[in-house]
Length: 113
Image 1 (cartoon, rainbow, N blue to C red):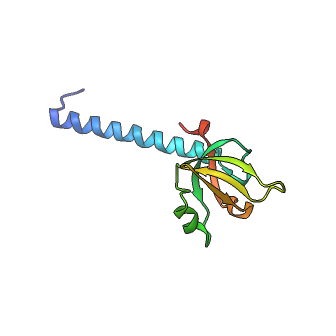
Image 2: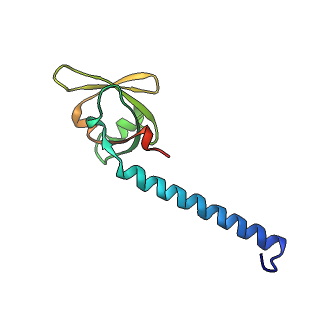
Image 3: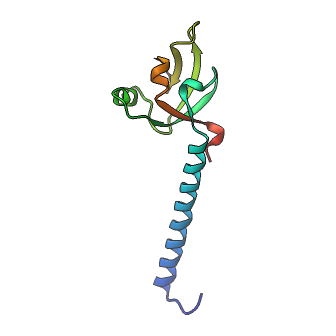
């Protein structure tokens, strides 16, 4: 490095590191969002992570029930006619109507970097 004192070198190192971290986070988030699906579209037995919950009167209730961002969940099974579906959220079984599951955007665990 050309004639930089110790303080300037540290500042440069920190700014380069922060830039790389920010760049990786932005790249990962864009990749994950491209691969997003609705919870209602996920097959039985598949494990996914919550990306977001759409704005709705049910949003707060879904968050209170444990559907938080980056929370891993597994679709367990569906009722015989396909509605409702059961998901494992942090060790407990949550039953959701399809209309409620359509509010939850998820990503396959394989899509997460």
